[in-house]
Length: 206
Image 1 (spheres, rainbow, N blue to C red):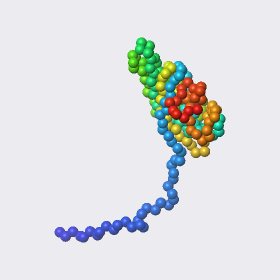
Image 2: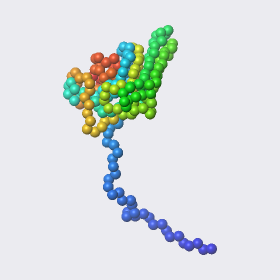
Image 3: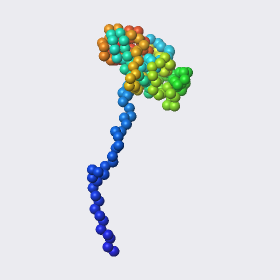
Image 4: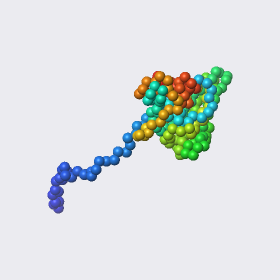
C-alpha cells in the first residue's frame, strides 16, 4: 500500500515564539553569605550566646566609634568544638540549643564530648531542622545556644547570613579608632577584641 506523503515540518518562525506580557518577577535581591568562623577560648566559659552576638561577628565601621552589623539576619547551620587537655586530665565540651523564648526553641538535647589521652573532646551539632532556631533570626537578646568549653578550646560556628534591603543594625559595643567603611570581625560573645573571651582567628579584628 502506498503511504501518503508527509508534509515537511515548518520551522518555527519569529512569530511562533512565546510572548511574555511583562518582565518576570525578581525573587530576591538580598545578599546571602555562608561562612565558617573560628574562635579560641582564652578562659573557661559556660553561658549563653545570643543572636545579637552572632550578628555582631561581622561588622562594618560607620564612624570611628560606631559599628553596624554587615547582615541583618543569621541562621545557624552547625557548631563544632575541639577541646584538648593534658594526658590524664580529661576535659569536656558541651552545647545545647535550648532557648525557652517563643520562636527560638531548639531541640533541648545536650551535645557533649570528652577528651581521652591525646584525643581532644569533640562536638559537632546542628539545631533541629524542625525548630525555628535553625531558621533566619534577626538581632535580639534571645539565646541562640548555650555553650560550655574549657580554656584553649577551638569553636567553629557555621552560619548563613542574609542582608534585608533597608535594614541596618548598630553593633552592641562601640569601636575605638575604626576606619570608616572597613569590615571587621568581632568575638563570638560580641565584645571588642580587647575584652572578648573568644577572639576570632581573623586578620581584621576590632
